Image 1 (cartoon, rainbow, N blue to C red):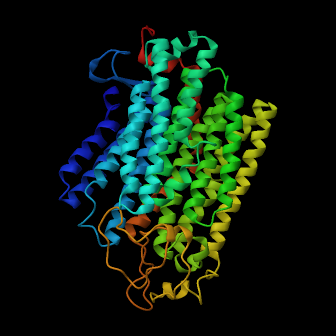
Image 2: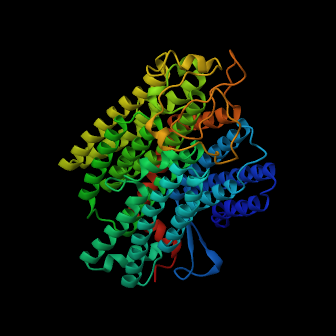
Image 3: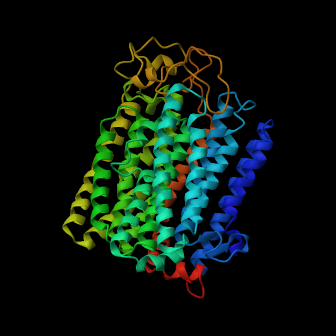
Length: 560
């Protein structure tokens, strides 16, 4: 069964090659992309079952023995993240396909979108399966190249500027990571993770600490932990809804995954525990304070994304099996819920013409289904019982209380405050965008004539909109004809709220609604299946703390 291990990497790469060849056949491109991710999801599920039943599965790529060749390892942690990441990428792909259909550009998409999206997926899956540091570095570089292309599709000024910032920060992280790999190889003679787990223990304490801090710095930038997170709120909101959603859901979690491996497999023992607890607390509090101050939904969600990385770091920093299990559960929860909220925000922008809270109102009455699709994951993110967000936070709080140290108690208090402020932030979005009847600065009832399909009176344009420059094409197609119902937006790619003349309201595109609904259902399933999911997370955490199952899977006869 270990032959299945490379397939989550091979299938998206194969699909990317095929879709590139089919650039002149959009329908075949879409079919190939959906098929590749569907099969990848099935393989990920099979690997999760096998890893849970039989332990970690290992493949020596090319037949080269470890540690000479590339090693792929599918343990409980990797396979669990594979399942949730492929499910999310499949739903987001369907959303982006529906967006092209809804905008009448189904026959003229940007040919590079599907190959790039599949390459991004391959980078994510390869990172989760990598059994050596250099292959993990290659995964990050795959992610960097693909994400830059997706971030700048459309070529607008604001996207190029955001993409440049993203690339500069990512290259800095990559340089630090590559330097750390070089130093680790010089000190140990290997980059294989299982072999490093034993050889790093024999290094002087000072050298081990320097190497550990270098890796944490590189991965901290990728994961957007404070104070290395300033780049994220300025980069992610500029992209189209599907791209922002998959970035928010997955890319930072690859950094979190790398931190988990670093702290458990390579450098166990808690030497950086206090530092990580402080960073976790600052990430939570500073991130959520930034979210509370925002008037744009995309930026608000970007700051909550940063804030909730702190919860994951909290569980990792505790270093206990209970803390790691809660952190793993929370990673799975957050990938799903954060992606869902960004897709729902894309629907808000399509229906309301903007994501600026000062220009929105009355969406609960105008689009009740959309209100439900935003309301449920928003409550989940805030940690309201009995959603999975509450269960994950409860597990983290219990692990912090069990630790008993003053610093752990301080982080427990900070995480509780962060949860309350998250509830305040999402409730504010609900009240302003959905519950109130009209936006106060929308002129004489701007939203209502827009909902009726007539031309809105001119209103003030948000700062983000004025900064975006002239409207440009969407990432999937050339620009469409202008329409009288178009409303100034925080993004140049906003969609008219309604069409078809007075009294006609354009229905929400079924595929967009269906993809978002599917993620909402997955989020609810995390609540229903919380028991089995916590069991898997607990088993994964126990194996991480033990380290022996991972090492013996790669070196059955013992590491050389």
